[in-house]
Length: 495
Image 1: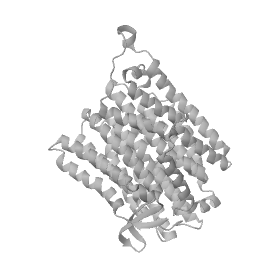
Image 2: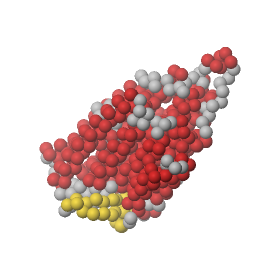
Image 3: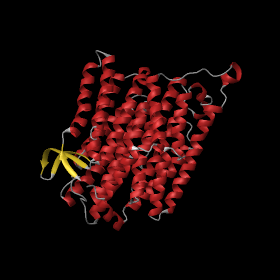
Image 4: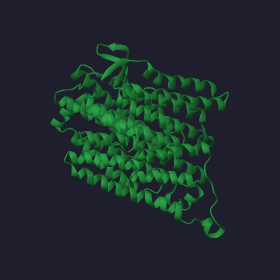
């Protein structure tokens, strides 16, 4: 691939970071101007990332070194097809969630804290995806983790503070483990840059310790068992738009980090020889089955969605252990699919809770007739989550299954099928009750009152739901094409 120098990656990270301080300066004077600046920051970030598309499709890798800290230790940025795909996905979902927040947060306190944190977290996510080395990635990864803590505790309830404390403790543990892995990589490989791969070429006890450290550091953020314990508590207590970003985007930073570790730090050849990915595959399978099974027992809507995220992230973790092209295609495409599906579900759940005050699943009877568009969007995303064709969730599971069969791992396909069955068991009752269940008002006082959310909330929910359909049937499927390119790129060694 051609390598070029361009300042655009720095701009993509710096813009929302600078806008955070601009928003802080103006928000007390004008709420309207604050809202305009928040949406503008998210929109320009997305358009700036999209501007990289011709370079990526043309096979270019963009890189820029800012300054050197020590010999072979620099602060740098890099755009290849993997980093572009994740930053495009993140900035797109972030823009829609930001628009949704304008109406949702009108009913919440602390908006002058929420919006700057929202944009600062966007900047740190962009920094993670566009980092050109593991040191830069680590700095933005820790920044994102610490800033997002404020989103988790935004409600300031006892439950939110407890969930935030658990999240913070695990973040510190994960950060220390990640830092250890980076130090060992620098010691064994002489560099932590993504430009020279693989960084570790020979197996050793120290290299194994580095692999385990990366597994802890990135696995915690990805919601991997047994480091998932923060996730079911944090997602339900956060504001619904924050929940959508935590599940739809920020979990993916952990998956992104592990993909970089597998293909840039160790390389597929070394991992196939040592079999170290077997541990990741076991933990991924447990995450899939545990997340899906426990979701079935949850009565709180957002808590059920949170446990569902653990199971779905297990698919992504499992796919990256099958080191062939079709499995990696399904793996990366499921990152796209899950982001669209779970963001839709959390935003729809937030709309339902806001309009009806109901968050217990047994209370949702008839909600589909009160809020038809919102519930149809929820249903489309839920059905896609089950893997029903022709939706995007089916396409990613299909590719993951074919990759598993290519590798002779038939039991992986069985795990995916069992999880899809469990998905149906915990999503279908919600959908059926919402559209066909009877409410108390309908039984005694006529039909339920129409109670749909305002357009600023409804449009982002509907657009995200449509992506789960369109990216399953469109012949010009940008996420699928990018996933195919990424799979080929990673198997070539990241060049």
